[in-house]
Image (tube, rainbow, N blue to C red; front, side, top):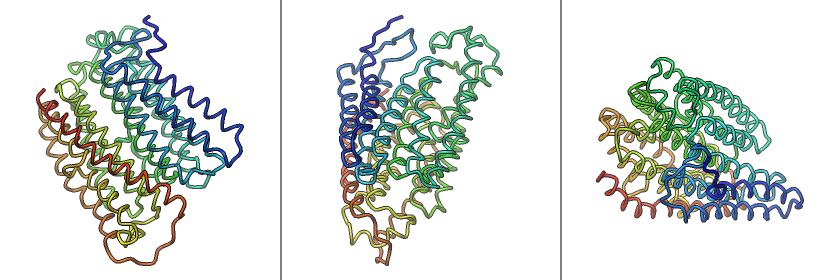
Length: 467
């Protein structure tokens, strides 16, 4: 059975951190909830440090249900680091709230669920990880306990439950078609002789859950409303952490478990990628609320990321390209939300004249938004370059053309946010000084990380292209 509890040390540390944070916060007065924040930060850092000694390991544990490989290692590093940035963004807006501890607990559980989702190599564990990573998202969406937050939480919960039913049904059907086995390696052998139509139904069921998790068409409906209704730190997590785990889970599922000669899933995923990036970009054109703009931006980014999944079994560079893009996207997207937390406004026009008042904050915003476009030499550009190359090598030249056109089109709505910041200032409502001051540091820091990250990513690009 290969039961090695210490092989799951990073995951166990996240779980222990969540429990400890919850118990600590329950006995602390409101003005000392920062102790719970320190415990959450310690758990996230411990999970990252516990991953470093096992970098490069390739094995499975617990009856082949959990994979220890480069994809899982990347998830163990990227997802907790993204959680750390979310906690940093939340330091101002969440501090002093009577539900501050609950925010950190939900963040830890969402991170744990996303890591398990990325490492699952068994349909049963995939379903459990999906549930673990979904419930905290609904709690975070409604954490503010206001009308908009309640609506956001309801949409996340109901759509997540509906998509989860599809995922469970698909997992059950594929397990039956595979001869009663649910681990990916043996499932691929069992599905090789199964009826194509039945396998296609099971794949669509699994996709229903995964597309909801990553916010891709047609499971994207919750993203703009949830991000707009949730607090800014919660919105930052909703648009980053689930996508990291969900995209790696989708890659592993299709690369290992579903034979492409039984179901033409590469074409299905490629079409979903094209539709997702196109809808996300064009829906963002008319958005006046910066939160909804970033929400649709993340939908479009998922479309680009799905290109690597579409060639999971066709291009050796698909996984490295996906990891490069995920790293750049996480840093850049969280940087944009950090700016939003530092200078919150309900309209893009609220940022008019910000370059005069807070020039370094506008500099961070410029790096992040142009980074999301994929402008050289930002981290997302390195990600797009590698993903586009992998898709081209995988025979999806038409998808690369669609993605290139979408990239150019996306520049329009990012500039709609940037241009007012450099124009003359008008009279706008004042922001919360404490929240803005505390959250501004992560904004600048994450923007700098997003720019500096190009150095190691560009060093990786030649290795990826050489495959």
